[in-house]
Length: 510
Image (tube, rainbow, N blue to C red; front, side, top):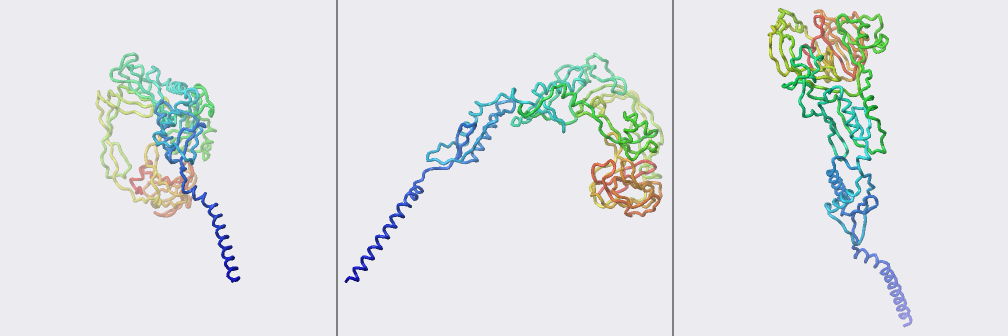
């Protein structure tokens, strides 16, 4: 009996302990369970501008969309970009009660706040003008317009054109320049008679009914104007900007030697001292012998921007009709022979003439009235195919063709290839040049049995010597980037009858 009582007391004590632990667990856990089960707080995102909470939305993406929409709407209200320099914060928040907006509602609230705090653009912005890599900053739109009016003034003596700023992108404050003709009657005084060959039909001071005169003004490079905050830029005056833009500096170009040229004559005609010409061409000395067709580096004056003008001109001139060509099956292709001389005619023409900084760069005939007809000359054109030539490299990308460019003749063709590409003889012959040659850099000439010659320029290394006989396809050099070259490539020429001809008449382009 005592044993049972003792067991019962032990069971009772265990029960009490168990209930005590359970009670403690309930006391601790119930508040957390209640908080999670009854939680009513929600996550949302608010936007604050310059310390002022403007509104809130369900997600961060909705806030960003609303902000962009408000900015776009604000920009549309002005002819120029609006700058505010605001301090914007987007914060995640959690509250039991949250006043959230739709994207449109929030956009409207942001727009209203920004509208009330727009800065006055005219008094706080400068204008950066960019011509290619050249940049100048002015203090106002009026100064920008004044600069361009000054740039075109000498080419618009009758003040027939007006300059204006055009908005390219209001959101970024980007402008372009327009130069448009004023709605006034043109006069013949606008025609630059000294710039044409022949006699102008109209006389100075008389009204020109057919539209002769200055017809357009533009620039040779893109002009971009961008608004920038005044406190982040240093400005210059209109006069200083004009001087910096129009100041000429020497720019290298290639001159092709003509019959009768000497180094001293070339130097004099290009405004250079002999020492300056020789410093530009390290392969030459005062005693160097030059030949027609050689290329020599000279310098020409160049400003940061060129003013392009177009004139319509009506005048009379002598002219020669296009020749008549006849096939000549007794001569190789590239050999032309004059069979009969033609006669000179006379005509009245209307032409559109283009100038760059006052120098003629192009002439297109719009109308022609023949006064005395020209009889064309007759020229025989060789049709025989010379001995077969092979393309001197394997692969490569065709990059430049035969013909005139930048006012001089490009006497051959170019293929872009990796430096060190093997160059082979296009045909069998004897090496007559193997070394540095003016702007060709390292160069090889091969004279062939029929009197033709092939030339390989801008080489990185040469594997043959003068007097050596080579077979067609034999490795003679490695391509490179020497001499007057803008990148690794092979320059290849074919000369027939002592003059360069188009190599693509003899070898494949690809």
